[in-house]
Amino acid sequence: MISLAKKTFLLFTVVLVLISLFMAASVYASESLIVYSPLHEEEIARILDKFSQETGIKTEFIRLSAGAVAARLIAEKDRPMADVFFGGSAESHESLIGEGILRPYQSPVLQDIDPSFYHPEYYWSGFYVGAIGFAINNNRFKQKYPDKEYPATWEDLLDPNYKGEISMASPAASGTAYTIVATQFFRLGEEKAWEYLEELDKNIAFYTSAGAAPAQHAAIGECIIGIAFGHDVMKLIQSGYDLNLVYPKDTGWEVGAVSIVKDGPNPEAAEKFVDWILSVDGQQLHSDISLRVATHPEVVLPEGSTPISDLQLVDYDYGWAGQNRERIVEEWNNRFLD
Image (cartoon, rainbow, N blue to C red; front, side, top):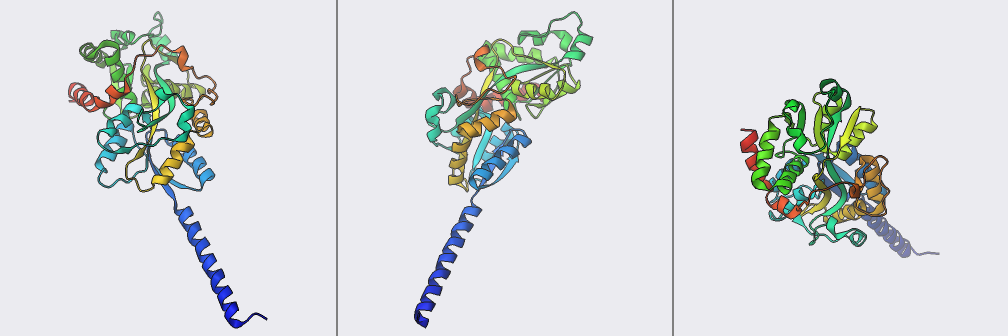
């Protein structure tokens, strides 16, 4: 027979074990991740849902343009609200390093990725590569310019016949647009780059806040030519829009990056997410959804995507682009928005 004292002791032990298990489960269940991202809302949602399914970590996200993400992170510097800056070109992340917004993290997955696709001190890590192209509305182009060839170079966009028929985003709000602007600096040098942008401005119908919007405008015929990343154009083509995608010589390109916010509320979850999105499975999911080219060599290229090796890319300096972003955007605003 078990004495009353032993029964009481056993019951007390069981209760303690149950309480411990409950507390451990509660802690795990409460682990969460807050993400700021300029990627398309559907992409973010699907990626984070999959991450949550595989890790049990709850996720929340706010979708903003890359420029707005950077501005918000700077505004929140003294009390960070986000854990991860997910997506956007590397220079958007570079511009935050000097502000003390990011903390370095060397994911073990980086051993499988080309060092040119991540920061040498691990402040950001690249999970995709994309190049700037021209989205051309085939039907409208042929109607309005029956005797012209499609624009194939940056200089072709300066043709006065295209006045009011080109759309691009504003670099004040869009990382895509900043890549477009910075590309001209690397192609031409600073003085001639501003001259080029002044001439291009004469043909711009409107500046958008989102980098993918110009391709969408071309798709529905609001303009004939939209300047955007090729993967954004490819998605519209695969959706049935009659667009032609042209990659010009010396085109700009980006490494899409992920970085961890310094002193964010969920640092361990942030590291788990970086490891996951850099992995083959994480990058394959993103590549399948977005049609972007992954940085991990084992990820299969999406159907219809152009390998980066087939393009003529400009010599793009991410460090310089990030360090000079504020100055260039301010000057661009003064020239074209005031």
